[in-house]
Image (cartoon, rainbow, N blue to C red; front, side):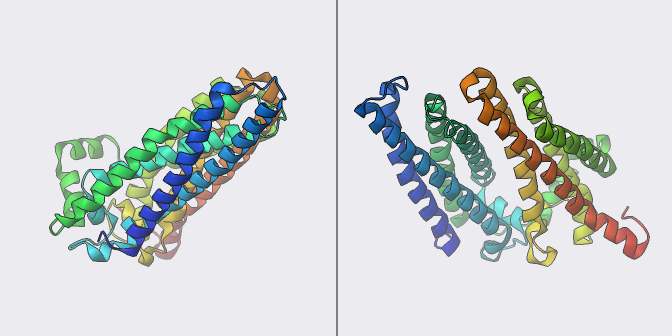
Length: 344
C-alpha cells in the first residue's frame, strides 16, 4: 500500500509543505532577533517585506496540511480499505496502521489547529501598519515545527506497519472493546441516550453563545472565551460519542454498531466528512475566538481587529453548531418518520 497514489500524494504534500516551512522558518530566525518596529529605515523595511513573505508561505503550509489531512482521512475511510485484507472500513485500516495511525491523525489535527491560531494572529497583525504582533505570530509559527516533523515521521511508521500486518477484522475490534471491562463499565455508566442528550442538549448553549459573541464581541474577554473553548472541547468529545452510539446505528441501520469510520463509506453518503468537518470547525473557531480575545487584551493597539475576529469566530461557531445538530439528528428523525419507532 506504500505505493498507493494517495499515499504518494500525502508524501508530496508533506515534502512541499516542509520545504516551504523550512524557508519561512529560516527567514523568521534571521529577522525576529533584529525586529525593530519603531524604526523605519531601509533594513527594517526589508525585514517587514521578509515577514510578509513568511506570512504568505505560512498560509501555504496551512493549506497544504489541511489537504494532506483530508487525503489521509479519505485514504483511511475509503481508498485503502480494499488494500488491507479483512478490512471493511477505516477501523480495519487503522488496525493495520498500528499505534502510529491514530497518532498521526491526532498530531496533524494539532498541527493544523496551531497553524490556524497562528494565521488568526497574523491576520489581526496585518490590519495594523506598525505590525505590533510580529514577534507573537512569528514565534507561533516556529512552534509548529516539532508537531509537523513528528506527524510526518509517525505517518511514515504507519505506512511501514501495513507491510507486516496480517488480515484484520473491523468488527472484532469493536466487539473486543465492548467486551472489555472498561467498555462494559462505560456502557453501564453512560448510555446512548445520555450521550445523545449531552450532544443535542449542548447545541442550544453553543448557538446562543456564538450569537452573543458575534453580536457583542467587545464584551467578550479572554477568560470567557477560554472557558468556552474548553467546554467546546468537552462537548466535541460527547458529540463524537453521540455520533457513534446514536447517529451511526440509524444511518447504518445496524443496531449497536458504534463505528465512526463506517460513516465515511460511500454507502452512507460519506456523511462522516460533513459531520466531523463541522466539529473541526467548532474546535477551530473556539480556539480562534480565545486567541483573538487574548491578543486584544494583551495588545491594546490591535484591539479593534482582534474584537472583529472574535465576532467572526462567534458567527462561524453558531452556524457550524446548528448545521451539525441538523445533520446529526436527521437520520434519527427520518427513521422515526418512516417506521414510527426508535431503534432499541
